[in-house]
Every structure is written in structure tokens, then in C-alpha cells.
Amino acid sequence: MNKSGINITRHACLYETAPAYVTDQPNFLNSAVRAVTKLGPHELLAVLKQIEKDMGRFGGIRYGPRPIDLDILFYGKFKVHSDILTIPHERIWERPFVMAPLMDLLGSSADCDTVTCWHSFSLLSGGLLEVWEKMGGESLIGKEGMKRVLPIKSGLWDWSQRTSVMGILNVTPDSFSDGGKFVSVEAAVTQARLMISEGADMIDIGAQSTRPMASRISAEEELDRLMPVLEAVAGMPEAEGKLISVDSFYSKVASEAVSKGAHLVNDVSAGQLDSNMLRVVAGLRVPYIAMHMRGEPHTMQNSENLQYDDVCKQVASEIYSRVKDVELSGIPAWRVIIDPGIGFSKKTEHDLDILVGLPNIRAEIARKSFGVSHAPMLIGPSRKKFLGHICSRIAADERDPATIACVTAGVLGGANIVRVHNVRDNADSVKVCDAMLKQRSTKNLS
Image 1: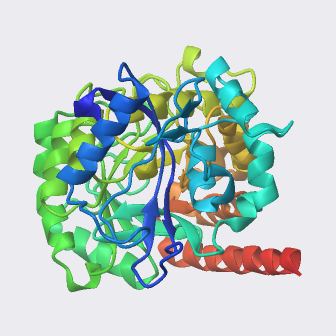
Image 2: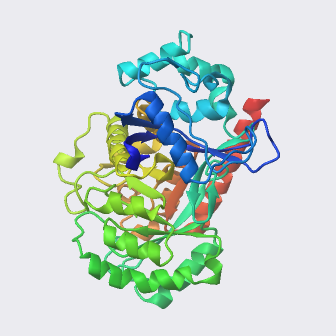
Image 3: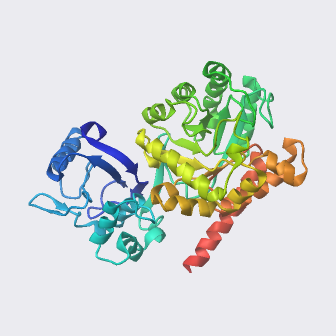
């Protein structure tokens, strides 16, 4: 579409849905995009039909199996009625699998007159929001054969089913908690094997320290540390079915790591420390973790970067701004994981506000984009310095009980991935939290 004069500016989540009308066929994937184009409505339709043809769509029975189906839901503020095109799309109002991704392109606050016009087309005083709520709204997700998914590795990940545990593997000499412990391939593989045996769903391998005041090393030095460990971990039989993440803000490192077996990229800078990162990750077609941080590790704790009036509101706004850049660079929102950056350019009180305010962060993002607000959220409080301040624990490895408390609060507040050093104990915490959330959901349904 981008190559055809249709410049995509926003993406919905990706939904796996049961087939409609003709049910004897595989599940569908549904999404929606907002875009800007100089093409007229009928020109746009012709371009979309050509894209369908180029991707292998020919004839077939109505609503039957097909590789792709592209529809125009809205076209600016205009209504169109011709023999071949009706806008707004006449069946928007009856299809939850269309309404769900359409809602993702909106926010709770209309961002322009065009969106206000789209709401008016619904003929309900509450606009599209009311249409969606009358259908069942968010309660439909996970039911009726419709769930949000993220393409990863060779499958689709439904992150709502349970919280994932990401084990931290630092192959650095200077990380704040375990620097120097796992720099050899043998030690790193042993640690990765231990974390997997204790319940890790993902292993996040980092070869550059991002602790406060850390000095930056080059991409080449980072690769020298990273690649032997990454290749060894990716080749472990125990890693089958697990996900490997590379923790780097360098595009060159991300590209090399994915070519050798990494499944996702974890960037503490959300693209701010390497101008090529977003373009490169878009080409890699892997999930991207975009974390909130001001400045860089060497400057993130200076007085200017620690100024907040409302930390949850400002973190949400700044995350949304970064994800907007991510989308414009060609990474669809359905491949993005967000991280509020606990311990990065934050004081102790800021970290605590974030931990208890995760729902507020999502709600603030939802003012601008429901889709981004629904993204999987990762939190990484493990052994951070603010826990040492609160609990008077100078040694980082004495902060595991405090970490478990943070993980518990975070999961109950809506976190989907927890990034931790101590996998065993935090995995137990996550299991209990997930059981509590499932029980609460069951009670609400009854």
C-alpha cells in the first residue's frame, strides 16, 4: 500500500477471528489502518483490487477462502454511493471483527474533524464508541472466536492468556546486578538453561550495560560479546518453543542478532539512540519492545530528565509519541510491545507511581489510540536501585523479595510480561496473580 500512494499513519491491533458466513475454512486475521492518499475513492478501490490480485486473490465463492480482502471503511468526510463502492462500508455496524480494529484506530478523544465525522456516520449520539459498546465492546475479545494476537517466531501469540516471564541474561562485565557472571559462553548457557527450567518463556540477552551512568560501547564490541552466546543459546534443545530477545539500541546489533536466531528486539531507547533502528526493525518483521527513557543511560538520571508533573500521564504521552514514530517507520502497532521504563530517568516516587498506575498509563494512551493502549506491556523492576532505597538493601541480589512485590502489583495492574533476574520465585508470583485474575474474571461473568 505504501508503494502505491497510500501512506499508512496508524495501525490497529491484529485479530485472529473465526471465519464468518462460510465457516468451513481456516481462521481469519483482521486489522485496519489509517492512511493518507491523493487517490480518489474509486482510484483507491482500483489500487486495492490490484494489490489483492498481486497477492493471489482470484474469484472464488463469496466469503470463501482467500489470501487477502481489502475494504474501504471510510474516505475522509465523504459518503460514496456507486455501483461498485459504498462508503461508509455498509456492514461496519454489524461486524465485530471489523469494529474491533476500526476502534483501535481511534482514541477516546477525537483527534481531528474527520474522525468526528466518522462518529456522526453511526447516527448514534455516542458515535462509534456507542456502536462498539452495544455490540459488547471489550468483553467480546477472547470470545466469539476473536482474540488479539502478535505474530512472533512462526506463530501467533495471544498474550492475554497468561503473563510471560522474561529471564535476564547479561553478558556484560559491568551490569548493576550480575555484571561479569555470564560473560563466558559456558556460564551464559548454563544460566539460560536454568532460567528455562525455572519457567522462563523468553530469554533477553544483553551485551551492553544500560545501568545509570554506564559508558557506551560500540556496536562491534557489543556484537563480539553477544553473538557467541546468542548462537549457543539459540541452539540449545531446551530453547525449543522459547523466545529469544536481543537487548540493544543499535540497529546493526538487532539485524545480526535476528539473523542468528533472536525473535524480538528490546530497545531501551525506542529508536532514539540509533536513527536507523526503526527502519531496520521494520525490515526484520519482528516484534519491537519500545521502552520509555529520557536521554541515554549516561544522562537519564540528570535533573532535567527527572522532571515530571504527572509521571504516568507524561510517560504515556511520550510512549505514544515514540510508537507513532515506530508506525510511520513501517513497524505496525501489532508488532509493538510497550515498556514504561521503571528505573530509567525516574526517581523512586516515579517508579512507585508507575507500578500502581499501569491502568492510568493505558487509559492515557487510549485518549489518542485504543490500539496502542491494548499493546502487550512489559515491566522490568527487577533488583532496581529504588528497591534498595525502600528496603535498605545495598546488594542488588538481596532485592528479590522486593522485586516479587513489584511483579505482583504490576501483573494485577495489567502487565503482560515481567523481565526478571530470579525466574523461579517470580514465575511463582506470576502464576498466583494469573490465577487471581482468572478467578476475578470468572466472578465478573457470573
